[in-house]
Image (tube, rainbow, N blue to C red):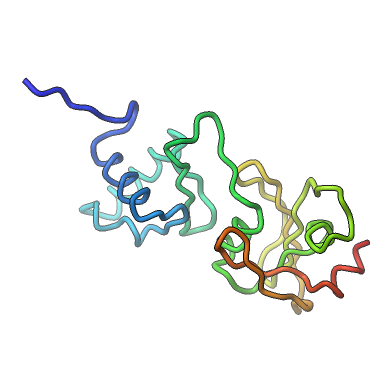
Length: 165
């Protein structure tokens, strides 16, 4: 008699999906990345809902999710600039406000809220323990592309950031 070894609280299919994402090192993923594991769209939605309920994934935007790493015990944080970039799929946004001022070294204080300027979104949302404040603008200001932990993001330029000091 063989004993099944699994991750507590996850079904066999959920383990397959989580294992695939972990092995591919896909922390951020879309429904399209995992649809091959499911027979139907409703099956896919059912499992996504189940993984969200169990705290294994977090919704980032309409079609993108964040896989909470298996080594995370009680909580896990991803750099807020990376999360912002993933929310907007890398376009039509930039990080500004006090977060940009801190990034450029004009202030030492860490911002409590990350201001994200975009042409499409407004309001606030807390994702992975970080509060984001979205400000809709007609035209994006001056921004630059930077890298952090091997991931690119858009941030207000050094000159543009000075107006928030």
